[in-house]
Length: 229
Image 1: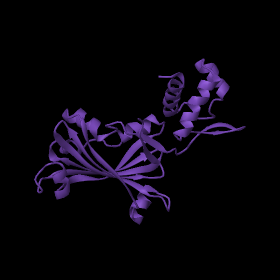
Image 2: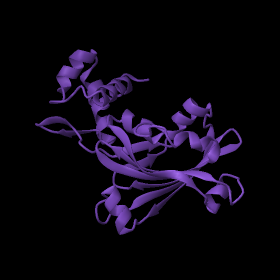
Image 3: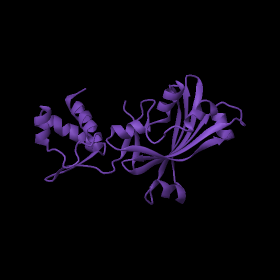
């Protein structure tokens, strides 16, 4: 990795660890600390500014952004929880509902008979103290039942599936569309008036077996997908 990328990654880590609770260091202080050129520091800070982590003002200095936009690279399997933490924000979830259900559409996506019993989990996901996404997850009863009593406050369902059932998500399918949420969903997400949301439909697989069908609603003003080629 180039030097500026190494500095930027380390600054992300330090921001996530809440090291900069007061003022953010000046360019010159970072030059001395990392023993790199001023150009390298400026490029690292410029990239963090593009990502919405920092704000730079001529004559005033550099400041942490309270609620930055989260950027998700589209390179394969990703975890919203890990993305939030990697960008220096607190990550947690409120479980709004969970239990057993029958849902023919979800069962079809999971390649199960329509009448199959499924496990349903609804979570409101937070980043930096603000709601970011609403997730509706459907899983087969085996292994979904293992999640009915699990602590879902932090982290991802996939990490718990690996920990509790030895199941590792290896791939899947995802479709992303723009949508205008109804007033109830807008209020739940605290989505500003006039802002759209991203509707994400996902089927996650462990090998050939579908293990989750998820419908997510994500704030369009705080989340974007990026691709690099």
